Image (cartoon, rainbow, N blue to C red; front, side):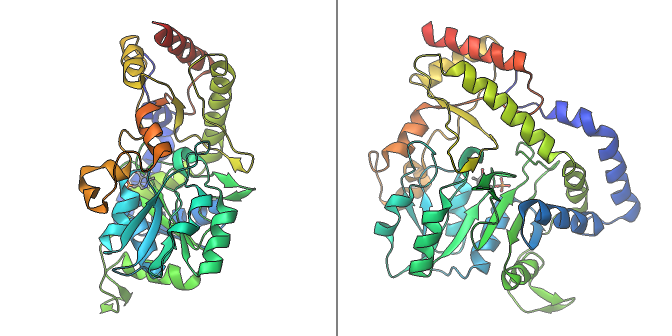
Length: 367
Ligand SMILES: Cc1ncc(COP(=O)(O)O)c(C=O)c1O
């Protein structure tokens, strides 16, 4: 059996430290925010190469607050890719702004920067690149367009902890960014969690207030806001995990390199491509295959877990019928939805297991 993800293997390797850190939260009774969260914020800001990290209760909350801090208002338009997790677009929606969807690049699978400018109108306020599967979007042209049109760049870095663009960390590239620490993410909490990171002092101050009822100081609410605070237990878990994130990322990259080597000889498989500008962190190792669902079923039969990220692009989701898009509008996003298959990927995956998956994939394709 090779599961798609194995959270237990990682937990076993850090169990003692996690229990000590959780105990400390219990002894302090610092259940909401508190010292463990503050310590984690410092570590994560340094890791991303930014001045500020504000920890919140999910990646979705992080994107929502990033959007508000960047000044996006109801009626504004925000340009986002058609292939992403639904939460990217929900965050735009929460504000009453309008998602303007675009196709993705056929090689990087991230937003295609060459098509952004034609979608800009007088209402456009921001661009929201998603570093999909753990690989950075091509940020230089996006930042250049944003500068010329006075738009904010809000990175959805939910899948991109430690990913890099030309040597700089995802999350530090635009004006502000949101991360998710959902348990299966490369840096995962033991429950829900997220963070906003930014170099902008004013944005960080706003996000800090927005996550905690808009309070400037206790009892003085200067903004209408939210309860999006991170729990102490999650800060403690994430603080421990920060000591290992680089080693775990290298583990994923090692497994990906073995997949790359083995899969290039299997006809009918399109492996992911690490772009020249990128350090890919392989949150998802996604291949493209025809007959994806049949291949997944055959792998399941021999005990290999897979997943699909994502079976429907945003423009074909029933809840976004209001955007008035149809099949054929964004062919690269649609191809991913039809053909993407996520193979097992975690840092504890051994070279032998990767070899087994590759062999089973070859057999499944030839059956
Ligand atoms: C690209 C993307 N954006 C946003 C989110 C939302 O994060 P969360 O599930 O922590 O709310 C996720 C993760 O689920 C994601 O993968």
